[in-house]
Image (tube, rainbow, N blue to C red):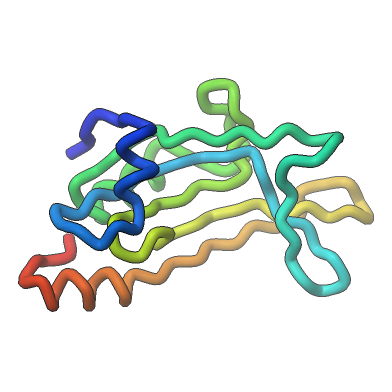
Length: 134
């Protein structure tokens, strides 16, 4: 189930460690690039304007992931934002999930993508509080 998004409330609640947990899906046009074998984050620079937006909030992690898998993809344009990064954040871990594009400076193309997911801290924290991770 998706719930109404309020940016001010979202920024105060993400990572606050309280129940009920919520799962914010956000997008941004930032991306990574390979810098001598290390990934560096491209964000606000003189040549690049960073844009991001929380687009939906869910009551379960499963529904947030389903929304990403069915309705979003890297490279699409969503609300005038070129989607180079998709993330899910919650009230316990902060960032649980991230998909991002990797730019190859030598060829000036997007040549790869990566997905990182780690729910262990949230599962453990919710279990200690008697709640179920869904």
